[in-house]
Length: 380
Picture 1 (cartoon, helix red, strand yellow):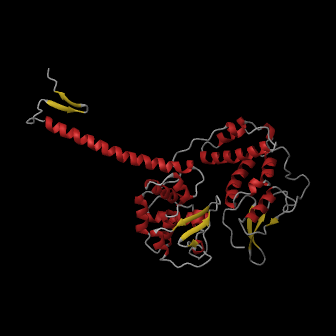
Picture 2: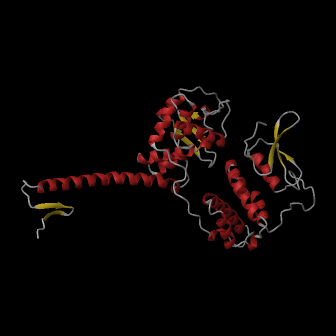
Picture 3: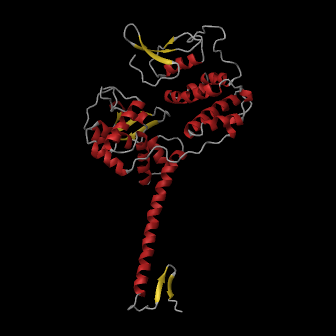
């Protein structure tokens, strides 16, 4: 097993066995140690991990009767059952990894609580404790709301207390959207033929998440187009390779079976590893952007070019209009501002002409221009 990423889930640690191979194990008090068999972070690996959390006998034998047993009727028991559902298993590996971490934090916070006694005010209290982290609170609310919705349908909970809660207000904007000046600054610093320039153009000209950009390679090129399935959503994508990206790809040599973007050791990037690497390259270039901000810049470019919401969704793989409406509305505001600027300039020109005509020596002397037209001069 190759060395796993540094951030491993709760109870998972790495060690080197007597053959020098790096392996992963699950260790939690009250359970036998489980040594993982599947490759790290694959769907099979996550299935092993979830089984360990649920203390399934096939993967995590109990050492003592009753030790760490999940109490029926508790939130923890509800979460364990949710992990066994088809709707959870149908989620992509990356979604299960990200949402699983959120759910496990909730499990530690409210796991012992009884489901039938968990009310809206309990949910509000949990969110209030996270008021200084509104994004994290909203993500937890979304995950738990979905679990309770399933529980109500399965008659495991009397009602969904999260329905009565509201999202915490967040600062608008999220990740910084790259400006055209910042893009040009990065291009000047990292010239043609560099990995940095290729990474920039790959995201900017495909409008993809970093998790998809790092997986794209020559095997995805079909008839001059990039054909692939998004990792997060499973959406099938079929995008043309446009001019500047095509030119940049022509400056590099690629190996079949490997992605376009590789580490300095010739290995594929992990999503987090690429994010950290690209952030460092942004700092070196003197720009504040991150990889996700390039995806937003690509959507902004499309909107400013007049693309519809459906066209932007086709490029980025977004599922609903709400996610792209922000870009379209911003572009429409900018275009309307440009149109109104022409109107304002025309109005100012007319006023300037009227004022000039009202100056001494002109035919309309004794009258001055006002915003509402020409008015007589007041004299006491």
